[in-house]
Amino acid sequence: MEIFDGRLIDAVNRKDLKEYLLNCNFGLEKENIRVDENGRLAETPHPEIFGNRLKNPYIKTDFSESQIEIATPVCHTLKDVYDSLENIHDTVCLNIGDEYLWPQSNPPYLPKEDEIPIANMGDEYEDKFRAVLAVKYGRKRQVISGIHYNFSFNEAFINSIYNEFANEENFMGFKNKLYLKICRNFMKYRWLLIYMTGASPVFHNTFIKKYVDESCSLDDGTCYYKNMISLRNSDYGYKNRNNFYIPFNSVESYVCEINRLADSKELQDICEFYGP
Image 1 (cartoon, rainbow, N blue to C red):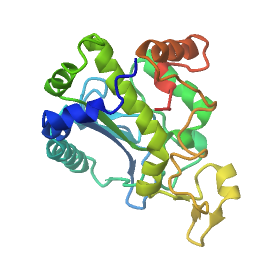
Image 2: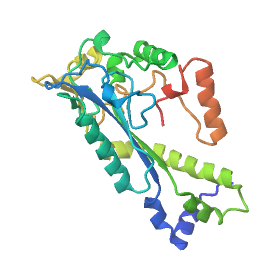
Image 3: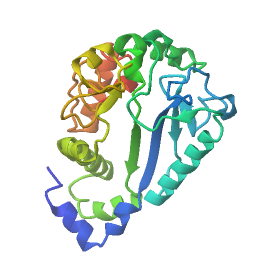
Image 4: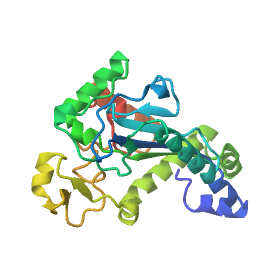
């Protein structure tokens, strides 16, 4: 039975639970390319001052040795999570010498494909996984950066509204349906979110040659596609080679399909799935 037919919003309003909607669990993960003073990708190793990248919970590397990933702890207000991100960002900036963090999601001035350093994780599986991605997608595509937004409701909020539906669904089933409904709505309207907030249509002419050749260009090495809002979220950006259609009807069907793709080697690992 579909339990989210308007009664959910009614329950939130009737119980005056709106304050819980901004008092949740938030986490941010932000990727940046390290660049030199000329805005070129830095080919230096991950700074030793940040320690073991597999054990440091806040400062890691993503695909490239030059690609720092900053991760906040779980925070309970938007202000706290932004403050945490800013503090870690500042810590990184103060400890990378004469290098800088490239502020855009699209890559900076890039060297040749095989000169982009793959992250040296010091772990056999992690290193092999990145090597496979480099061959499958190309290193230049893999250094497109972004922000991952992690979110969950306060358990008190879920418990409060669950009481409205307890006779129709067990708690775990209710909770799963709640999050899956949010996922489906996000996918339904993500085109609008990208349209309203996308601001990365340009890229440098050292990016993937095929895309550079097809694009419009300016005299300063800037390339762009007409009417493109976000390179990362376009067919030219950070996406799987094939279009995978993953069901969001239930947690079981979602997990089953992701595992099937990994078992069949259509995905090297479940982490390779770049869809929502």
